[in-house]
Length: 312
Ligand code: SF4
Ligand code: SF4
Image (cartoon, rainbow, N blue to C red; front, side):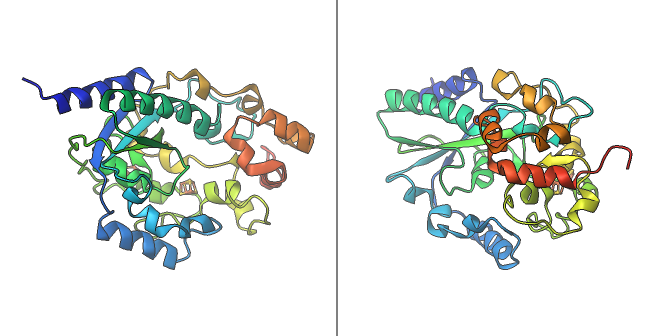
């Protein structure tokens, strides 16, 4: 006979799936383990957070989710597929898949909020949904909650599904039985390290954001980029998917069923001419509900200038 706790856990997981999430797992909300703290500290000491200065702040909260929600007992980790339904026109400048459609923060926040209300109703406990809105070690918690493992490309890899998944969390004061952590690893594979166009994965353990094209093109929006970027950027203007595209775990990636993640017309046809002809106001309107807004108008122009004409 199933216990009431198991019934609640199953209800939450099936509600998550019916809302469009592809995986849902539970981990006990505790202080992050020492190895993970040291790993993060080393990344900061090396300066590999680059222009992402925010990554160095709120270390107390980052390493203890109970400080993000008083009385938190469980971290619920959730993943949602964003592998594209269709791809950009071949002549378009490249946008990473995650930024193809509607801003994932908006989409996930709606779904997480709905699930959080459901949890509150059936448990009487409080919740806090998070989607890049709180300093939380999301891949760490996803691994602890059993939904995947952290690959050498620093992405969470869901066994049998791949890594083109957005992550979100719900902290709750409900005590839910933790799932078994995922213990898989990359083994001897080194493909992402070998295929990274800028050597950003050369240091074992975490990406060097001072070299990662994704960080440089998106986060470093208001500064000149080092000259070497132009040699390796190809026709990318927003992000880089190379270390995921070459990963064997993505060979069988299937298209998302979330229509919001379909590429917008602006992304489908994003050419250098289109970018250069776009006013700041037009940029704002076009990308108001897109993760591309983070690159900003000036940053997108700078990135477009770095790309080389096809015939070069
Ligand atoms: S996103 Fe691109 S540049 Fe960054 S680590 Fe992956 S392959 Fe390298
Ligand atoms: S390419 Fe290989 S090493 Fe890199 S994340 Fe995928 S499995 Fe791991």
